[in-house]
Image (cartoon, rainbow, N blue to C red):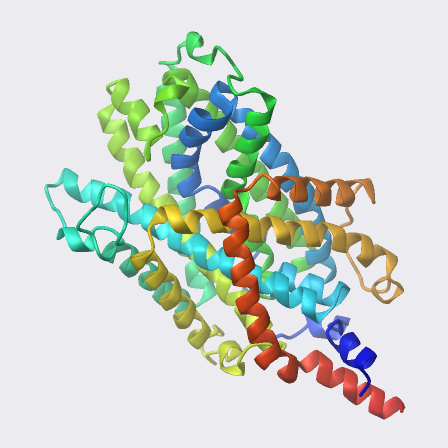
Length: 479
């Protein structure tokens, strides 16, 4: 085999046809409402109770809502691109599968590996936040864990901590719930999402009566640049809708329901984030909001402690829904990569009763729970955004190739990105720009993670690739 041929093998593309969409092994039990609640469950979680204060104090001031608006606009552009892909290629794997069909295997592996890090670190970071809020609730009943089990070693303010036991336990509980089946997980998530939205609306309504107009001045103390940098941080709040697109194979009518679920969840989440941010900075001066629990702080300052207790409970519930959906998304991504031969086949083996990749789910849950137990939040939260922005950028660019390649023109689709090719190109440029706003530490760790991924690909994935095997068979057949 020539060097040119071997190089071409790295970019072999995943073949898709309408027969693949009919029966894929996963149970089709989700609808548009299920997808919307999944999206809101993933998007509106730890971020809405933590990030508005941090962004206001460090980047945007009272204009924090503008940072969320900018992030929402960039996400909406990417969401339109996701929607076209999900209605054209309704297969598990989200951006990984889309890029595999358009750009080929090596780029798909790099992107899929980046997304695995996003899901693992997102679950781990949210589990650590969940642990902190949960321990605050326990403290209200005068119940305290031994200090060594309260947080990971090296956590600021916890000099004697060694292991975050609550974070480890909740992540394993979520894995157990997911193993029971997607239908059951979706029902639990839907109930929690409704409760979470009710708690957020309660804060907005109660706190709105205590807004002081003077707190809105100056509106942009850090300038427009602060708003943009704040948007890069706020992006963390919106990454959840990527997890919705991993559910394609478990949706009853994916070509109709996937675009509805993706766009609807983004709209609902954006309205909630912006409304809460406007009220928060109106109640508390932005310079006082650089705390881990800004919403609770605002309620204590206006002497609404009973609401603060409810909000803390809502935060725990909210973060639980994020853990459910992000864990689900991570396991379905690994399922898709394994089914393509790039990871061991045991990772896509389904339980015949629940139609769930059990081994995959337990392994993902165990790794994420260990990360949550031993790595401080300050170290893992940095790594979530870059993998997602990379995926959004590639999906946006991929739509251009999806439309221009003749092999995809015969695939039926129910949604197309409007104002093509302006929106996909703008989405790509915006995602790349936000990536460049992230810290050097994030880029360094991202590079190390990708190197590890390339070692795995060339030592295992390349030789076990099903797409490459099928390509070789096709060449031999047609000689």
